[in-house]
Image 1 (cartoon, rainbow, N blue to C red):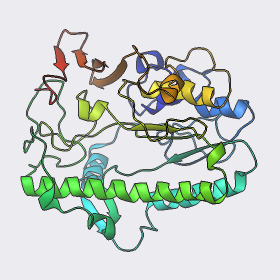
Image 2 (image 1 turned 180 degrees about the horizontal axis):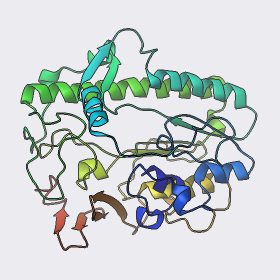
Image 3 (image 1 turned 135 degrees about the vertical axis):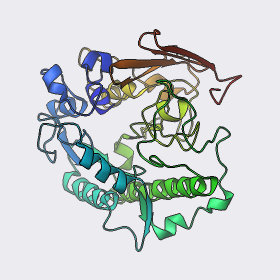
Image 4 (image 1 turned 90 degrees about the vertical axis):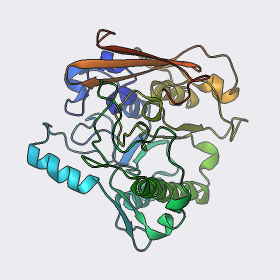
Length: 350
C-alpha cells in the first residue's frame, strides 16, 4: 500500500505485493510524492512510519527518513515473538508520553515551529490503531465493552477456508474470540484510535497557534481497514469491505465544502494528484490516480472511476474492484474463486 500510494502507481505496476522489496529496485527513476514536493522547492520532513521500515525513499526527505536496509521474512522464532507482542491490549497511565504516537506528535510540532515561514511538506506517521492496542487508561474509560455491539456476522474463528479468508495474524491468533473478549478488543481498538486522534489534535492546535491553518492543506488517511470479528477475522489483508475500505480526509482551507462527505468511490492513488493540484504544481507523468479536487469542490459531482485493491496469498493474486454499489473480486484471475457483492441487497457480503 505504501509503495503504491507514495509512487502513485498500482501494485501490478510497481510489482510490489509485500513489505520486503524496496520500490526503487523495480522503479529506479520514479518520482515519489514527497520527492516531487522537494523538487518543487518544499522542505520535506517526516516523523514516524511513512514508508515501511527499511524501505524509505532516499530522495524524498530534507529532514528525517530512515536508513535503507534489506528485509527478509520473519524466522519462526521472530514470528512467535511478534505474536506474543501483538495479540494483546494494554491501558497505560498518564497521557501516553512514552508511546510512539505521542512522541511523533511532539516531533511534528517541533518541525512545524522550525519550518514556519517556508513552504513545507510534513508527513506524520501515527501507529495506532495498529496492534498491540495500547492507550492511556482515560481513553479505555470512554468505551464500555458491555455496550459495544458485535458485528452481525461475528464468529469465534474465521468462517471460511478459501483465499478470501485469512487466518488471524494480528489478534486472537490461534485462539477463539468469545463475545466478551471480542467486545473488550473492540473497546481497546476504539481507545487506541481516540489516543491517536488526541495526538493529531495536538498537531492541528500547533498549526492554529502559529497561524498556519489558513495556508495549509491537510490530509488524513489510514493505509488499510481492519476486521473486528466480521466473519471471525481479526486482521488486515483481505478483500472484504472492512479491510479494503479505509478513512481518507482532505482539508483545503480555501474550499467552501468543509465538513462534507462524498459518496463517491475513491482510492489512495488519488491522493498524489490531489495534493499536487491543490498546491498548484504540475503532476509528473505516469500517475494512475485522479485528482479529487472536483469532489472537494462538489462532493456530489459525477465520478465514474472505481477503486482497485490487490493482495497476494502465496503465489495467488487477489484483485477486487469497487464501485458505489458493487464489489467484484477474482482470485488467480478467477480460476480459484470469484465474488460479486451488491451492497444495496447484501451489505454484509454474505
